Amino acid sequence: MVNFIYVILSDSEGSHLSGLSLQNDKLNVLYHQAEAYRIICLYFIVGKNYMNSLWFGLIFLGLLFSFINKSPETVTNVLFFEIEKSVELILNLIPIMAFWTGLMRIVEKTSILNKLSSLIKPFVRYLFKDVQNDVKAVNAILMTLAANLFGIGNSATAFGIKAMQEMQKSNLNKKTATNAMCMFLIINVSSIQLIPLNIIKLRADSGSSAPSEIMVPTLIVTSFSTMAAVILAKYFERKEL
Amino acid sequence: MRISDLVLPILIGLILFYGISKGVDVYSAFVEGAIDGAKSALKIFPYILAIIFAINLFIQSGAEAFIVDILTPITALVGFPTELLSLSIVKPLSGGGSLGVFQTILDNYGADSFIGRSASVIMGSSETIFYTTAVYFGSVGISNYRYTIKVGLLSHAATIFAALIVCKLMF
Image 1 (cartoon, each protein chain N blue to C red):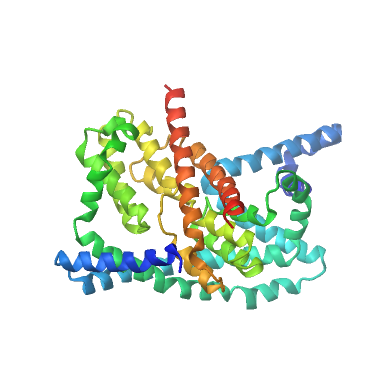
Image 2: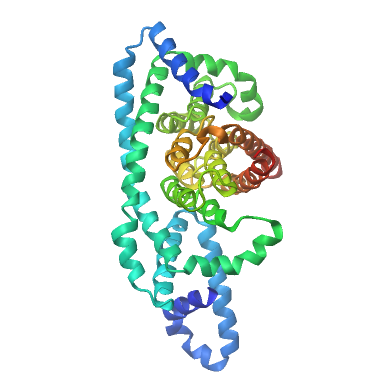
């Protein structure tokens, strides 16, 4: 695989390196391979380009191997028969997503989210020390976490942006994240959803005999990974001081 | 009857009764929210289309078999199912994309296989790290994320290993 990337890279950088390659072919190959690895590593670190290169890479390798395996008709088959599945997938998702966001809208119109917020106040003191006395920020943080617990992604994003704006007000360095912001983001991206409804629905659609049997294991794994994330966040928080 | 089968009816009942008792117009609230849900389901269509094309091409052309052949000796050493590699890589990047990969796994191995169950648990307990981080930090113009991505990816790795262990022990 490295060789394909090597070929692509030497094409794009060949012009200014051609002189060098005449002098020392072996060194040049090593240089290109090191460069290839560096670029691959960069793609893994830089989030934005990651999906871009992954998507391109999948298609590029797919096209390449359809020729290597002498079956270019694979591309036609995929284009005319396989991508239909995306419509089926969406059609199956629309009702469950709509149903759940519909129910959640009812919850939002009652004040139960505020009550839940006051239940988990002690955690806030430990996790978000920077802003523990900032009522507005704490409330927005708790609303986001509550929304995430119940899997209402859109509302969670709305609350989350509000929470970030409140936390930014007391931030001294506007370009750098505070400890509380990092902790907030880390908890959000470690997933705290209680019931993975979409997953249960997809399992039921593909003929599972017990689609919801993954609920308990998911809860265990989610709690474990969130705990690990919080401990790691606290560790790096202290290390960077 | 399983306990997990009871959760949904109880939850739905609770939400509706609580809403009614608080004087919420549950029907219009439901319809209003459902429109948003349908819209966000449609919004992920292009992402799913893009990834389903790429992934099917990648698998059917034999490129995946080639890479799996290369990786098998390495992953066999630690007992990691190779089939879950692409899911583990795509999930932090794209919610829609990972749904495509997940569906492919369900189609190929079945929802009740070890791989199908592990994939379900991984899907249910991980997040789109890069997207969420970009949206939240982007909304207040912060460019230095410090250790956020690093910890997010470490916790993603913890999720995958925990999912495999838990699925092995529980089923």
